[in-house]
Image (cartoon, rainbow, N blue to C red; front, side, top):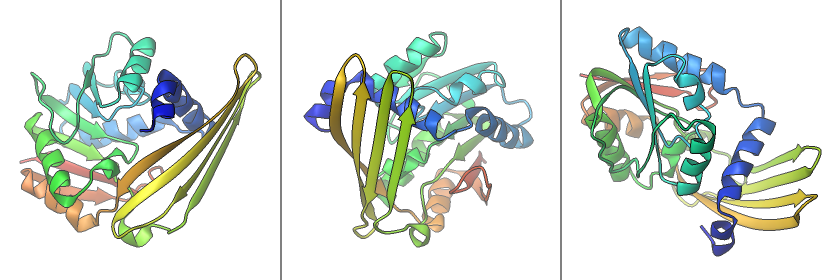
Amino acid sequence: MGDEMEAYGSGLAELYELIYAGRGKDYAAESADVTALVQARKPDAASLLDVACGTGGHLVFFKRHFATVEGLELSEHMIAKAGQSMPEVPVHQGDMQDFTLDRTYDAISCMFSSIGYVGSAAELNNTLASLARHLNPGGVIVIEPWYFPEAFLPGYIADDLVRTEDRVTVRVSHSERHGDQVPIIVHYIDARKDAGIRHFTDVHRMHLFTRQQYETAFERAGCSVEYIDRARFGCGLFVGVLK
């Protein structure tokens, strides 16, 4: 993250929420789908950890379905934003590749294709091992993957425009593939009546994993696994159960 992004701090978490709201992201429906997949495999599931939970968009709805919900997030700014909207839900700071909490859960979710930030097959294996360590017997892991290599479109350009009464935010990104590594260059223009215009950039460093690599990581972590192609989730879902 560049100096200008770090200086923007919690403002980035706010923009993150604005952009996804502008895209019409249906957190409630996604959370209900994940809950149904968990309960079909573990009907008595009562606790869930949402890994790479961001500002807690899914956690807000997961807490309607599970007696205990918690989050794990690397960014302190995202954690702070989540705490503002749901102070009763613990969100731990940690890296999904190697974290240790003092309890286990019936279910673990990892949404937003956040798994794509893992940098190699070895790190993917480490991540699944970390998740599995935090599962109760028969527990369920639901992961929303990023694109498989054959589905990625080199040079892909994405754009968002979000307009409110006092603010206009534009996000433009460009993705370029280098082997299985994909740096996504993102530019933001954020115009506010009370603060003028800011322009800043960010780089998301993503990795393309094959379906086999995901399945191997689940199996090495001691989980059975199935891939579910769901229209609501553009890249589908992997659902694993700890053996």
